[in-house]
Amino acid sequence: MNISEEDVRNLIISYLNEEGLELYDLNLADFPNVSKVEIFIYSPSGLDHKTIERLSYQLQNVLQDSNIERGTYDLLVSSPGIEPILNTARHFELALGKTIKIKTFRDICGEYLFLGTLTAFNTKNITMILENDNALNLDIENIKKAKVIYREKVEIGNNEIR
View 1 (cartoon, rainbow, N blue to C red):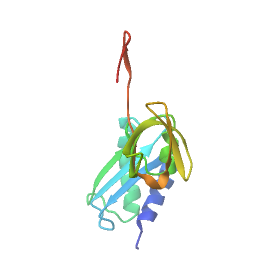
View 2: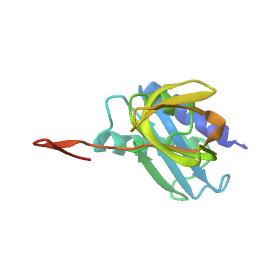
View 3: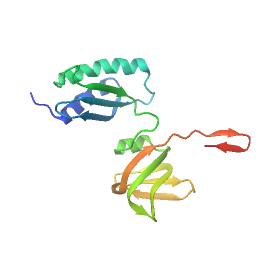
View 4: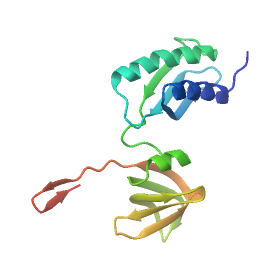
């Protein structure tokens, strides 16, 4: 039985949906002779190590059902982390209100790198408020790389450390 990457993705999505979880990202290295599987799972309540361990075991069964034999690949099951990469509309939706860093293909006023708070997105563009309080509208097609940036502010007296 031949199975495609999309078939594997759909089986994983189906399993995670039954668990009340969401597939954030999937990387299958060297498909169809898979050498590494990376499964990043989103949960609004977060994932603890026991849940990750259980999911790792169960997802091996899902992969085996996809004719990817146990022991023939390295498996990583994880949350997207505190600084996830933003590739899809859903990723941008989850990042609303967070600080993001964008690298563009084409310059905007001589700049290629932007840091600010994501305030809106749609299928054609995103809006972010930059650190200088200016709004920036970016065409999605101009985004080369995007990720959430974790920034914890610590206040000591009148001084703020970033």
